[in-house]
Length: 269
Image 1 (cartoon, one colour):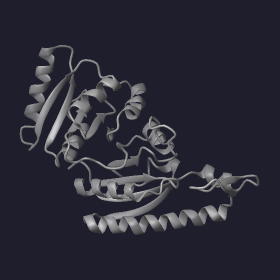
Image 2 (cartoon, helix red, strand yellow):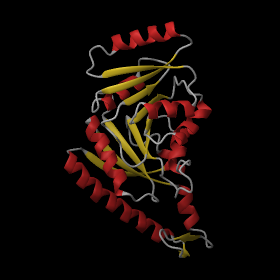
Image 3 (cartoon, one colour):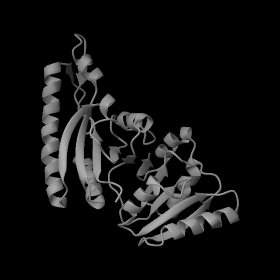
Image 4 (cartoon, helix red, strand yellow):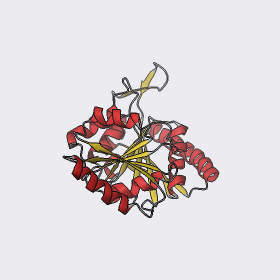
């Protein structure tokens, strides 16, 4: 197993128990420990201390003067709710767990983790489905850890898809970890011609010879986001694993890929 420690990054705006449940299920599937990490911003605390600062109450049109003490108390209540709900889910699924709090700037260093989870909605109320939440977008852009961006539920019974220029390494290992539930792996292989594709296909099958997974390979001529989305939809894929280091997708297209797909996307680093 390549993943032993999983961290779920949450912010104060996303108070959805379903996110905690999905993260716990991921940790259980990977047989990993889970930490729920409340990510706050130093800018928010400074803003609350300004004499003219106001906040809009969630779920209403009412506003009130921002107060640092009230903000701190609200975050403490949120930590308490996270602890209660995560504890219930973790005991139900037999997962070792903990909760922690850190600043956005310190996420890359704290706590040590093999895989960072983030709900694509984290950080904003979506006006359009084609928008990543601010927290998710920030972590995808700046964090050097492997990140799984998901929304609501996972589909462990569907095949896992792998997109990488290298047929070995962390991307393949994590794809196999997640493919244990369905037993099916789709490898999207970019090659200039049929012969090159066949050589890559043969090499990958030898690598996976000892793994109990049904492998299907697909020749990809041009890995553009919309074409990839169409291919994954045709194969009823439940997750895409992308090698963010040796990626076939241009770096500037990664955000577009995340926006286009409605399935979880795991960026391995």
